[in-house]
Length: 400
Image (cartoon, rainbow, N blue to C red; front, top):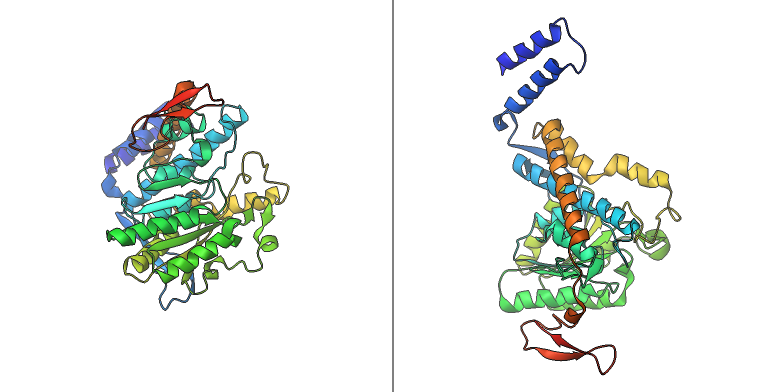
């Protein structure tokens, strides 16, 4: 390394010294390329924001250890979700994606932090802002974008679109406001019934938090001590209405009353991860449900039909982007603590953009499902039967 530095010094002192000259750039490139992974720290410890607690004697830790490997993984995953959503925005405006489309950019720390704290065998169900969770639960970008464009290669064979995506131990993507919460309690009941030490994460937004069915679900979950983490993703606006105008109490983490709760910084992936580990241990120990409120923010409007600036200012959005962006926060931590460098993260960015472009190419060229498959997949693992079409004379076959 010392020899390489000497080489760069000689090049910069040479007679042709100009910013960006070929020899200087090449020497700098060689130095960067020669830097081994041993030059980076293997891990670092960070202070994270203290969680507010309700009916809990203990709280999640206020420090978190981040390994270099974890940091790179979180950074890549959040960048993929961010770029995937920006590409979805572009495809929607080109009228290639149609119908409803709710984007997740700004909230990436929530899905990445949650997934990093649970097991693949655990279960998750969420509302219609589901693209990020679909990816963290194991579905490829190609399958997600193809589903958005209604193609055969989509994760739901092009029949679900933005709001109805599924994967192993991931139950959507649900379009009815709040309806996924009692379904999540049912999944948690199955976890308890089969005794597999599994838990269910049941997510909903601040707009759905006033639904009666959610409070009914709290009651059953508490009575039966279900291993369920109820998670309110509070992005401050239910459609176009601020939380202050919609809710008499905006302390969503206390809404369970008799159920313990946590209020978490949802823009910090480490804070979400540590709080989720704490909540998961609570559920697995047989103490019953727990409630988490993730304070986060969406950069896009409620859906693609909402410009998102009629009920909030552009300055507000820009302020969150500049001060609280989850990707920028993680990036700064990694750079400032020698867990990575600018060049390495830029390489990841380039790889991510390439992956997104290739997925978009597939999603715009893959064929749509043929009409005769309209009745397919009504039931799983059932014998073939006939399905009536738009009139009694049209019949389709249902194939599992």
